[in-house]
Length: 93
Image 1 (cartoon, helix red, strand yellow):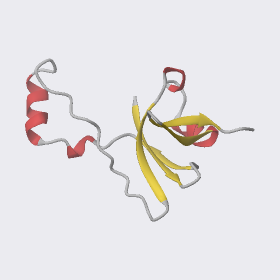
Image 2 (tube, rainbow, N blue to C red; image 1 turned 90 degrees about the vertical axis):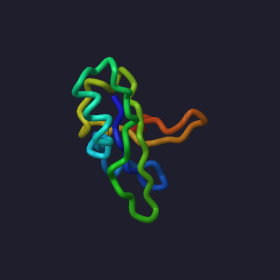
Image 3 (cartoon, rainbow, N blue to C red; image 1 turned 60 degrees about the vertical axis):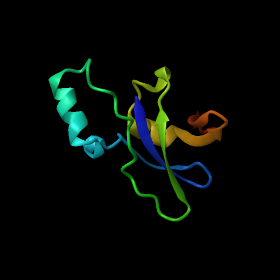
Image 4 (cartoon, rainbow, N blue to C red; image 1 turned 180 degrees about the horizontal axis):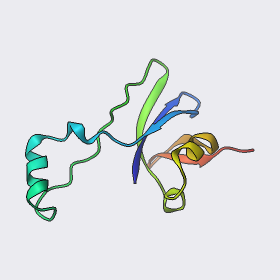
């Protein structure tokens, strides 16, 4: 599952959300309605608009976080950047 993460410069999560699929083109929607096997998968797009000093990233949730609520992720994780891209890291208690 891919989620949007809005974070400040320190990696503190400010908001979480599901990617906005309303920006997928009409052509792709029509192809998807005709058959899921023939329709190409459109990449998720970012819908949140960050303010100065904030960044918005698309983050793939690891399997161990798939059953955790967004509220719990917001409270217990922070965004970190690695060579492979942004990921969530637990906050020290």
